[in-house]
Image (cartoon, rainbow, N blue to C red; front, side, top):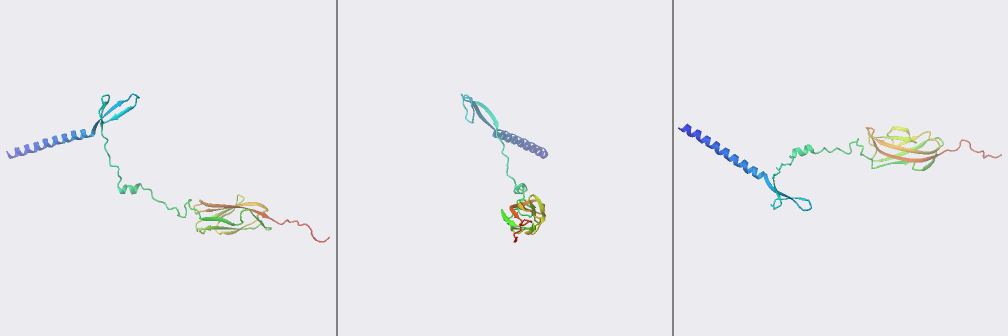
Length: 197
């Protein structure tokens, strides 16, 4: 008899539980739907409202379920791009604060019978150990990897010349560039005889 009563109690609790779940499901379904009213005005414009009207057509729609769009802090860290150093000795964005050709000055006229032109460049800060100068004269390479800020151009002929100095980093990327135009004068090889006749 006790066994029979126990079985009956379990059965009743199951039936009651199932009935409660069904009621909750109906309640949730009712909460998830909403009636709106649609009508078209005399200009042909469509309107929607949750207030009923005589000329409105009722429409049953489901509520949009909200989703938690927050991202955990750990996930945000993964999404954030890592900051890269802008001054790692290799960045093409790196520029010297000041970079100039000290001599010859732009548009300077100078005498050089032996064809030697002294060049001096200035950088601020000083040239880094991994960087180097590339020097061209009239578009032709004069020094491919120059480290000194003072050097001489040789066999420079009479006339106007364009000097260009570039700074490259250790990966051969251009960091900065300056140029200067100068004019070389030479004493004529044949000088007129100014002696006494």
